[in-house]
Length: 216
Image (cartoon, rainbow, N blue to C red; front, side, top):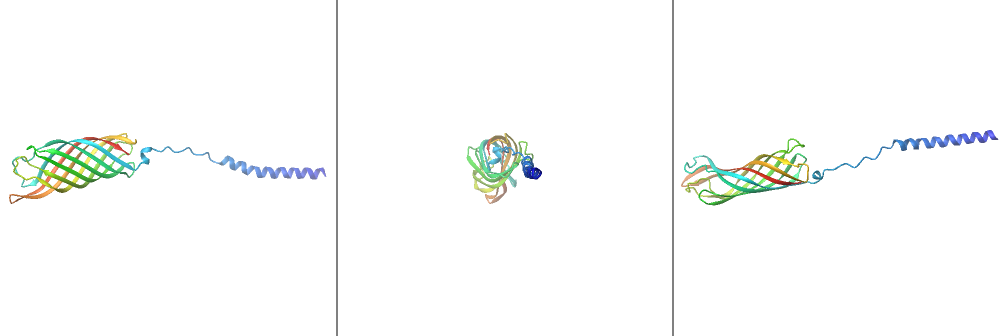
């Protein structure tokens, strides 16, 4: 009888160990909980806003049959710009740019140019602040004068607008950054009549250097 009892006790012990062992192995094999990932707050936002100002030099010109007297004056002024858009990824931003350029001709005549452009900004290296910029859209010119002689009429109309530039952004991974840039804007005004003659391919060129605050 003692032998039977002992055999039963050994069998019960073996079964208990067999059931306990897989549970212990499973508990030991469970991987530790992964730490919470660190998220860059700038990458969470899809907003891209740029607000700044520039020092601008502008000049009117045409491709052929341009008036010789008083042609080619360089005017110096300031301008403001703003861009509202969104971040496609860490290297590409797209949005709508508005740039307003008030100026005064040599004859003390005020005129205005307003650019409304689809704009894109690309950073070749995600870890660096260098960026390239380009855009296309419309420009609204009011009383634009492209000569100093006073013999040509002013131009008030819509035109094709282009821009391209290069710059550097500081704190490019932060919510608020600062960028410095150089850019050229072009207004292709086109042809118009004067004294029975056609003046072809009238253009306005705007060269700017400036700074802006960037919000992401």
